[in-house]
Image (cartoon, rainbow, N blue to C red; front, top):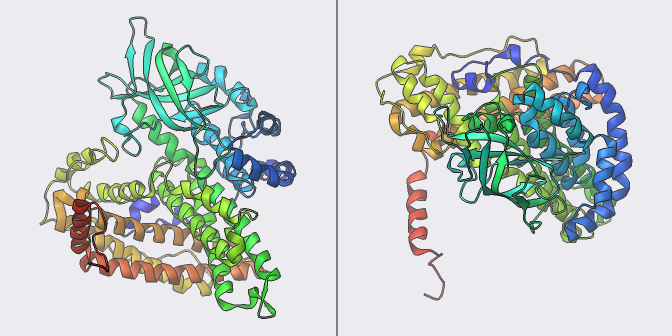
Amino acid sequence: MSVAKNLMAGRILEEQLFPYPSLRDKDREVLGMMVDAIDQFLGPRHQDFKRWDVKAEQPAEFIQGLRDLGLFGLIIPEEHGGLGLSNAGYARVLSQSSSHDSSVSLTIGAHSSIGMKGILLFGTAEQKARYLPKLASGAMIAAFCLTESGAGSDAASIRTHAVKNADGSWILNGEKIWITNGGIADLYTVFARTSSAAGKITAFLVEAACPGVSHGQHEDKMGIRASSTTTVSFADVRVPADNVLDSEGKGFKVAMAILNNGRTGLGGGAVGGMKALIALATQQALTRRQFEIPIAEFGLVREKISQMTVDCFAAESVVWMVAHYIDSGAQDYSVEAAMSKIFASEALQRSAYEALQIAAGSGFMRDYPYEKITRDCRILTIFEGTNEVLRLYIALSGLKDLGKSFGELKAAVDDIFNNFIKGFGVLTDYAEKRLTQATGVGRDKILTPLPEALREAAGIYERYTLELAKAADYLLRKHGKSIADRQHDLKRVADIGIDLFVGLCVLSRAASLGRASGEQGVQAIGIARVFAQQAKRRMANIVRRITRNEDGEMNRLAGFILDKGRYPWDVVS
């Protein structure tokens, strides 16, 4: 069962939150060696990373070094030549590589998280035997080809198409844009429109060496500049029948499963970036002196460092909880994965801002690493689903399950998600229904024994789980069939849910660490208390804004500016 969706119904599934999960023994053994090897390989290359960022390239010999380390086979099973890491172990590797350079993590992650993940999830035995050994060794590098011009978050509107031949093969035509690893990949997972009663999109495995496959020039990007990003074009490419992933017409399901399953890699990378920023900021604060004292003594600097630490601990807690759900075989974790992606990506951007601020003028200079990290992390709230789209997905997923409590709503609510994001559809009008009566929403107490210092924090999550359920009930009753169009309200529902789920992950982890002796356990409990109070203030403000807000005025202002096409005021007129 989905923990996040149940929060919207007023229920805390504590058996899926407590105790906080730990890494598998096998992962710990492999990671002990892998983390050190990554540091030894990447640590001396920081000046190279700066140079490659400017030149926008990763040299072939460096890519070969990644192959030699086994970084392309992290999650591929051992029987196919890989390391067989769990999602949690994989996220930890990307955390380590991201502490050195984001472009490195992107090259690895685009291959493992999404490029060849479809083969692991949906591949036939023959497809796995044919491709996984080469993908594990890095003899083949993979890329994920979904995005097109005009079809980013609206993936259902892709125009790349495939026509089926009499012998079962396909002819593929179209162009994909902004494809990570596009210029170095040997195997593409490509999504194309097909005419099928089973569905409108089909997933194909397409080798770069096939006639008609080509890629464009390296894109000149703001950040992650050294990683390969290109267009990939398909002109009358013949794709064998046995290169269809899953089955004809099931491509949309394949794409969403890949993206949901791969988000722990992105989250792990964000955590690694935050850890690097905290190390940089603390060193800067300890060594830089102003007014004859280290700036580490200044309250506002200390506040920044402590907030970066709280955010990093929270992001780490939620990312590894989601990885645990995936590794333990959970079937419904897409909302939790979206929440972890949103929180981790935004926390990293806040940390980059604050670390640069602590460095002051030096942080603005290219001689220092802050400006590069700031540029690199900006993409995280955009790719693998923009955070705006994911917030809509989170809210509507929860409201969908609430609506299913009523038989007459089931078909209408299901229709919202027949076409992800583009075709939300509408809910049947049920203004007279009361979800609180139908679902028995009430205050759900956390019964797991907690350190006394965490009981107040637990009470906050208990209270606001009920507030979220009330808000969902109120919005569904008030807006009925128009709820899918109420994006301001959907964002509010999502943001309360994110704070609740992340906060409960923090609570669980702090409770486990707090039972151990030592200063780190004490500080973990302190972090959980701080996060709970901050979340309480955010959630209280959101709850108030559900009924009292400026949405109407803001919408009218946007209409006015859009009509003008500019900012119209000027002090001279």
